[in-house]
Structures are given as C-alpha cells and as structure tokens.
Image 1: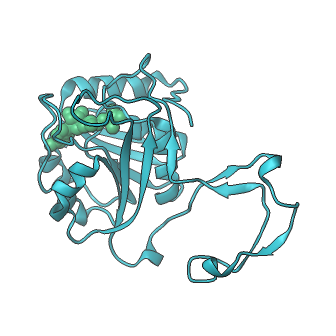
Image 2 (image 1 turned 45 degrees about the horizontal axis):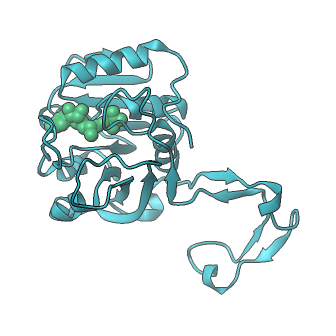
Image 3 (image 1 turned 90 degrees about the vertical axis):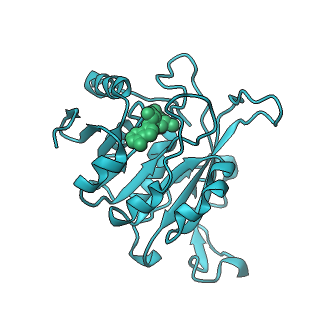
Length: 250
Ligand SMILES: C[S@@+](CC[C@H](N)C(=O)[O-])C[C@H]1O[C@@H](n2cnc3c(N)ncnc32)[C@H](O)[C@@H]1O
C-alpha cells in the first residue's frame, strides 16, 4: 500500500480506516478523534464498530469524544477496559447548539486491554512554583488513602506534581487548520503518558495531522489514516514545513 506522505517519523495513508487498517501491523498506542456524528458536516458520520477494529492492532487507546457519543455507542467498546477520563477545557464554547449548555470542553477516555501492569503508562509531571511546595526534600507519610497498590506510602518533595485531569488549552481560532483540530499540547501529554519513547502511535481519523505533530515533538513515530484528500494535503504540508508547530500551549 502506497502512503500519501512519508518521512522519517510519519506515514500517512489516504483512505477509509476500515479498508486501510487490516493492511497495518500493531502499535504501542492509538490516539484518535473520531467523527462524533453530532453535526451536519458531510464527513461527520460515526463509524460504527471502529473501536473493535482496533483490538488486533493495539492494547492502549485514547479516544476523544462527547459523553453522548461514548454512551450512545458504548457497546462498541466491549472488550476494552476504561482506565480514566480526561477533560480538555477549550477556554471558550464552540458548540453551535442553542438548546443546551454551550460546550466548552471535550472528553478524552483512555481504554486498555490485557493486564494493566503490562501496559506502558507514565503520568507526566508538572513543575510547582515555590509557594506550592512543601519543605524541601521532606519525606512525608502520604496518609492512609494512598497506602495501597496505587502508590508508595511516603513521598519526597520533588518540586513537581502529577499533571491533573483537566487540561486547559484555549482553542486558537486564528491558526486553526481544521474546525475540529485538537491541541498539540494536549496530545503531547496523552502520548507521553501511554506510548514509550521511540514507540509508534496510530491515528486512524487523522484530520489535519495534529497527532503526528505531537508524536514528533515527543520523540515518537506516527502512522495516520485519513479518508479526505484535502485533509491529507493539509497534513502533508503541515508536516513538511519543518517549523516548530506548537498548535496551542497549556
Ligand atoms: C474530528 S476529525 C479529526 C481532527 C484531528 N484530530 C485534528 O486535530 O485535525 C475526524 C476526521 O476523520 C476523518 N474520517 C471520517 N471517517 C473516516 C474513516 N472511515 N476513515 C478515515 N478517516 C475518516 C474525517 O475526514 C475527519 O478529518
């Protein structure tokens, strides 16, 4: 199968993921943003069964979606276990619906298959400023709630904290390539968490290629599938630019 675009770290296929996927191998992680099936856009048709198609290709999946999308299609996720949900706070509402609260966030759910201990998962950490720190190099008892399989019973002040589950990344309307584009800064955290350094991420609903940009920034490779040629063109141009594509920052 001939890729539409390929460079050292990214391979992009033009086509329907249902037809392309069987020709591909396995991946450390899938990060994707499928059509939710919630707008009148021509391409926004929920592809029934897509999470099942991925089960032979990966054990780890981050999927963007609305809660309505996930619940309407929950049976598609049979065989996957939910590890956690993260919220992307867009900063401002983008939903055109006038009969509901204006949605200013998206959900990102992490699913996995097989034993959790076999799965790569490294929670990213963020620096805390001096005011938020405990006394330097203090080793403390973490308290009864954390004295379990979830973590050690003591911890030392390192000046960092686990990244929290609400990720703030304002949607930048001035440079957005795709109306449903996801911020590279959010994708970087999802990839860092669940794909080992040097590993490969698949995005079967690639849109403008944000997943590949984030993979590149974090030292991972990416394989993309996108069925609209206009989006493949955009992605190929974006990846060829070779300039620092920040795509929104946290
Ligand atoms: C929500 S957008 C992804 C946007 C992307 N996250 C970004 O940051 O640009 C979903 C994309 O999936 C593509 N798509 C829809 N159905 C597909 C299918 N069956 N196979 C491959 N791509 C598909 C659409 O053309 C659209 O570009």
